[in-house]
Length: 310
Ligand SMILES: [Zn+2]
Image (cartoon, rainbow, N blue to C red):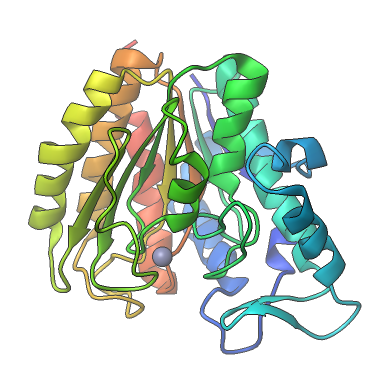
């Protein structure tokens, strides 16, 4: 079945200053790589709609959503935290980024696609119920997961986060909701300094020390994520796909390679094949080395294709 690729032109207009690592060139690098690799030809492209207010309110407080709308500047930058700013296009980009996750969920739940990759920015996994932080405004993957529950009656959604940073926002949003199983690996101690001490039967956090390589990452996935995922039997697998744990990414200090991303993607597709009719919706989070990001996204998407059992 089809692999869908969801993006929107607005996502390239959000910019937080010339030297900010979370930059529009990230999406250009991914697109170039998909074209050069020939992968582009097998993807079904969709334009992301804007998320509706009601869809945002499933995971964010109304006064926080109002705050983000009110902060949107007519020109220049409006800083919401030390490294998170809005330009005049950011609100539009953030709405389309969250809307991409909603459309992705609709496509897999309606059998119009089996796997979906959302090439979006701003990213989302640091955005909490009531707080923008860490380059994130609305929690895209959470908006998608909540949509699956509310609009499609999904009772068990797995959200898997292999970004090098802990997905504090996603954990904040679903910490009291056992319909979501949240699995995360992240460098620790490191920004945002959360998750390492979480006690919950539906949150599986595995902190990794600086310098940890692909073998350590795979051991974490094998020993902690996969048993929890198979026991949970998700009806939908969602991925917070950040690629900043790559050895070439100097944002952090883990040492993953493309083949580690290929491996974990196959494992997650196997979970989806076993329990969720193959349904996977992946949303871009971090990844700041343009070359490593583009190669990693390409193998991530390519690994969707090798994983079919039906
Ligand atoms: Zn990150």
